[in-house]
Image (tube, rainbow, N blue to C red; front, side, top):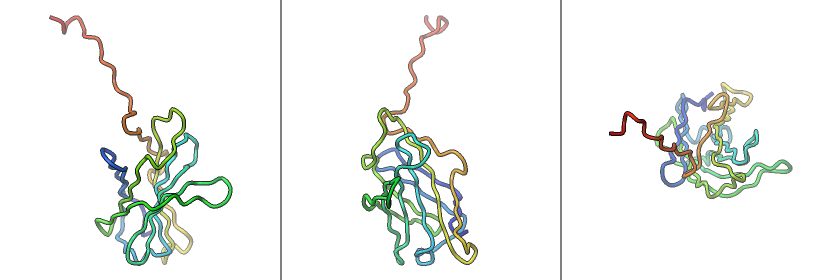
Length: 159
C-alpha cells in the first residue's frame, strides 16, 4: 500500500517526543484524504493494548494531528491537536509532550508502535502496516532510565 512503513525515527532528547514515519512510496496529502491515516500508539499503563494514540490525517491541503485516549466502552476521547510536519513526500512527523499522558504508578517507561491504514486502488479493502512488526518499542521516560552504578576499583587499578 501507499503508506507501508519503511522506518520510524523517534526524537526525544529535548522537548516533545517526535515520531517521523517514513514510507516506502511517495504520497500526496490530497491523495490520502479520507483514505489514509498514520498512527502512533502509546502504552503508558503496562497493558497489552495502547491507552493513547496520535492520529495523522489529511485535511486535503495539509495534515492534521490529534491526540486520542482509547476507551473500553464508547467512542475514543479527543484530547486535542498535536503538531504535524511534512519534510518530504515520504514522511510525516508528529509530536506530543509526555506531560499530556497519564502513566501508571511507578511506570519508568512506555511502549510505542506505529500503524498505518490505507484504502485505494491497490488496497480495495483497508491495508494495514505496523512497525515494528512484532513487539512494541520500549522507551524510557525522560530522566528515568537506569543509571549504571560505579563499579568498585579493582586492586590492579589502585596505585
